[in-house]
Image 1: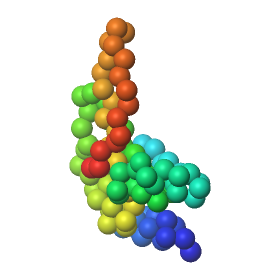
Image 2: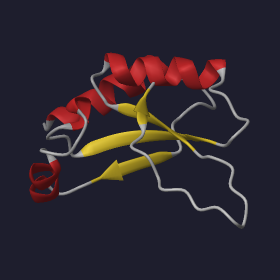
Image 3: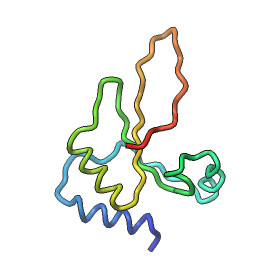
Image 4: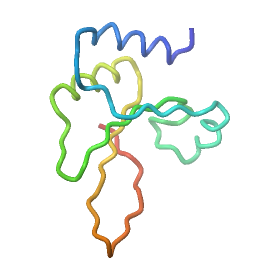
Length: 102
């Protein structure tokens, strides 16, 4: 069984009965894409084919339920990052930043 499957299975067993809290996005990439991005990825994502992303708006915060879920995923060695969406006005544009680790 691939390591990602083992990690997801372990996280699922720990979180059974939990309701809300799962990160918003699950990003998958091919082995070739993961290898190609390894030089520019943050250390915790290098060589990874899976990344879970919690997206927060300008005034949002990580809830207790989300923190529980994230802790369980990280204990199962699954990378989880926070993508903070910044507010913008029509006259300004922003460049997305690399998500930060929770």
